Length: 389
Image (cartoon, rainbow, N blue to C red; front, top):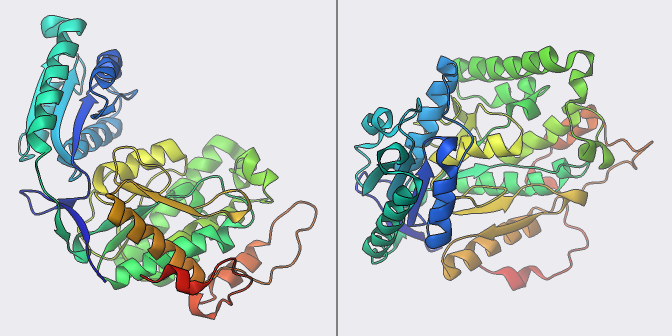
């Protein structure tokens, strides 16, 4: 099977995209970044709602980690940073974190010359950078340099036995090829510590898993009180779910069945290979913000500044995949996901739903323990031969 292609960076990492990133250091300059995005639509422009005011030490740590990681992102070939000048995450404060990015980086502050002039300078820099990096060529990307993040959203009663199981099979296949897979959403792991710790690499990793889930559960109880077990959306309930335990049992399925080698903090880049568990919320926007800065190749749920996505869940257990790669890589990865879905079909003999509620947590646990290879194929709408890799 051939390799995926990508762009080799000077630090030895690989990206499968070659973006010019235009990013705000603070929410106050989002208008400038948006103006540049209209002038240079081929650039990836990232406004956000943070950076103004003080904030706690933890909030500041996460903010600087995410902004710096975006600059260092292997899918980014050049960077234009737009700051205000008086924010806590100003360009001067960020400089020590980004000056060793080994790629073109230019910084502009609105308080130096005004919004319009800053937008003009940023536009000129982005266009110049795009011309400079557009000639870079793709090279074969070794499987052991591929890092894929898994995210799910819009879960219903079937997500844990269809789409997430399919992505779990993809996770296992990638780890088997030497790639790394990372998944998170700690609020959607409440009630699953006993499942995940059995897969921990060692006692240290197991303790971190328990601590992460306990913290998420305590925070949920602090906020929601007696309704903590219902920390699921109205859409989840409409889809047949009744508790967070049901959702969690399906959520963790997208990580497959391999050993969990490391637990990392919000926005932290993993140092181990294989399957990685990451601390971060189940709320999709914040969850994607957690994974986006350090997953250079593929990221589920939506594209953003990433390479692509493998959408993990959906109404009635739908599973789709789309990737922002070259056309040949796109076809290859689409076929890969479909092939795994076909060969490891996720159709189970489930009891009918009763009173609008999904399968019980105990039933979900039983499903979780079923090896993919033992799940029967039924009523496939297409021949397997149509998806030869």
